[in-house]
Image (tube, rainbow, N blue to C red; front, side, top):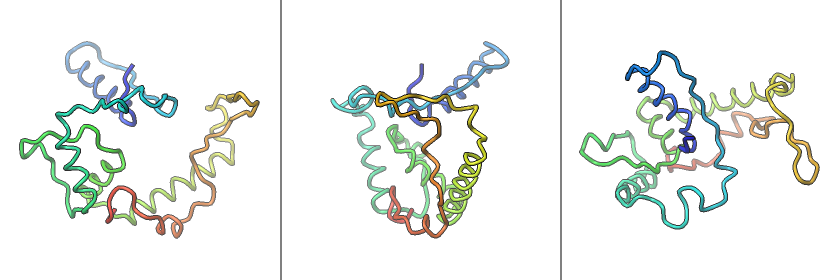
Length: 168
C-alpha cells in the first residue's frame, strides 16, 4: 500500500519503471486510489506535527513564492536546496503552468471542456457500469460521481479567484 495522496498512482508507476529497469519483470500493473477523504484527522501527515523539519525551509520558500507570485518556476535542486515534499497539488500545477507556458485561459478552457464532457457522459449513462452503488447509513444510495458539476461555463470559471497564487 502506498499513501502519497494525489500522487499515489504516479508513485506506483515510478516503482513499476524501477522494477522493469532492475530486471524484476517486463510488465507491471500500476494503479492508485484516493482514500485520504476517508481518513480520520491525525492519521496521515497532520496533527501532531508529523512534517519532517528537514523540509521546513522548503515549505517556507513555497509559501513565500505562492504569496508573492512569480513569473517563472525554478527547481530548488539546481541551487542545492531541498524541494518542498509537502507542496500542494494546486501549487504544483501552478509551477508546471509557468514552466510549460500554460495560461490561466488555457487551463480554464480545458477545465470547462472536461466538466462539460463529464456531464454529457453521466447524462448518457456512460459510467453506470463502472460505479458500484453504495448505501449510506441513512439509506441513501449513492450511484453517481459527485465531482463533475452541471452547467459549468467559461465565464463562470474565469470569475473564480485564484487559490494557490495571486496571479494564478
